Length: 500
Image 1 (cartoon, one colour):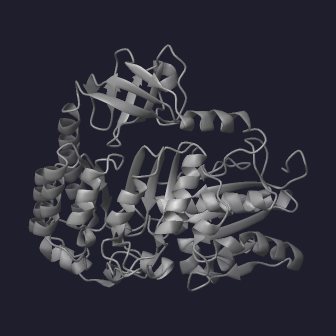
Image 2: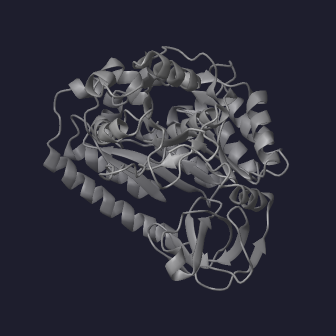
Image 3: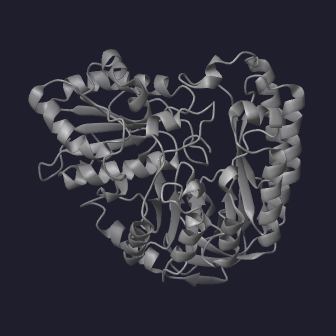
């Protein structure tokens, strides 16, 4: 289905973490720069790009299932192309074309900028183009980007990872850490603010290791403080840090920079020192809890979330109880919890003492129950507070039925609030009083206390006005491409790819 001007249409399907979502924004920008337009809801697109993840469970099954569903669509749609990129493409390489010979292009994590040229070459030569580079040629933030949001933006400050966690394959797929120059990062943020963005999230596989490639151990805290000086930037977040690199200067920068939000995603993975050692996580329980205590001393209102893996090889009941102990003491606002499953190519996949599925499930259920209780208790403490909420788009699935709108508090809690009489747009802010708490959201059922129109709301309105001509380019979830319906996607986790 080509556009009205004869341009080819595209869909980008994103699996996995925030880094992949941001990469998909770049892929969309590249394609639109090359003359493609985003496909509408009806008909089949001329191009489908899968940006894959190798970390999520059954990632390959999801990909090949959806590629299989596209095969008959491509047969009836002359000239349609299919491209597969991302971490799974970097890992599987020629396997993808062997299993799905109707795929036109396979590209890796280091060469997303080559996609338009590879598509053209595949069309001319009438055969699949597989190009996987082993190292980064150009930092991807230099590429054109079609941002998903008009009011909030991802900003990558580094790519790659220097850790060797035994459960994670990301370093092998994205390479060693490479840092952007601080001036380049700040220039990108300033440009985004100039376009109306008021919230940025700094991204890295191990975001607070920023500076290791620059020879400055305090580079990350300096970057937070410098970003805090950018006029018009109201909210700064970052994900995902590693406990090993989380230093006191970062805590001070968070506490002393007004527009750095008091929100922290700090992956635990396990509370057992023995399991942490087997994971090659370079911290122990005392170190982790010490960070939590320091953060709360500096920022008593900090909302702290985490990642936890249940059932890592060799995990005993005693090990699991150590994790439960940390959860009770840390009192996370929420936790992204995962049942361990083998990832081919990781050392953990070859370890002895794989924990039986039934045992893992039982432990997982106990952890979920405990965290739900803690999340609800922590959210109840928000009742009666007056908060400024950044109005979001698409966060409240029941908003139309309940006559509510939704958005995020400064600490990133999801808040549903009564729709004010005054018009309010995504990107604007409202001031409300919290009246009710659930484990995963807050309610403000009373009247809105204030509405503030922002440049971000203006940017959203402007984008909406030109949406028919040039809509946003990132698809989260699978597209409806012909029949049958595509397979569902797993929800993305809260941290970067490997939950560092």
